Image (tube, rainbow, N blue to C red; front, side, top):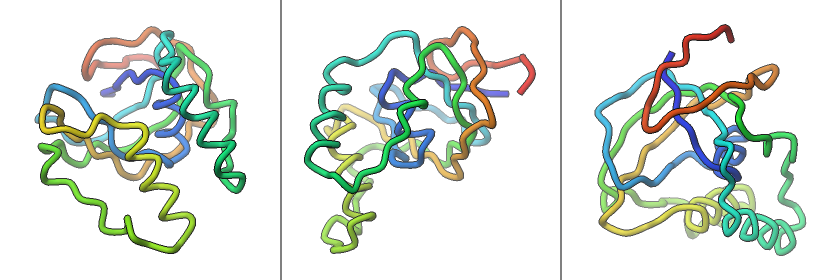
Length: 146
């Protein structure tokens, strides 16, 4: 099965469904089922942003068990990859706190410029248990047991 490696906290946010877009400098033509793998490398700046976000948004619920590294965390579907100027956040003016939180997370935890592509994920569910494994660069093949 195809897999993609993300640094933490991006992998954890994706596994919990708070993040649905990964911004990358390279596009992909792949669409379909995909596993989310948490890299052994953590993005410390993003971890600091996550802590600040949690402090400023007390209602934001976050299960820290998804911050493990070197493991498969979730399964979903890569729906589309597109140039970022084609992405908009139709609910950015929403007063619904849940929708507002999702939009805020995408904006805070993404690189939003025309040099990046938006990899859009849907149907994300956490795996029943994490699976330790080495990751890869780009989209790679996981051949182990789920």
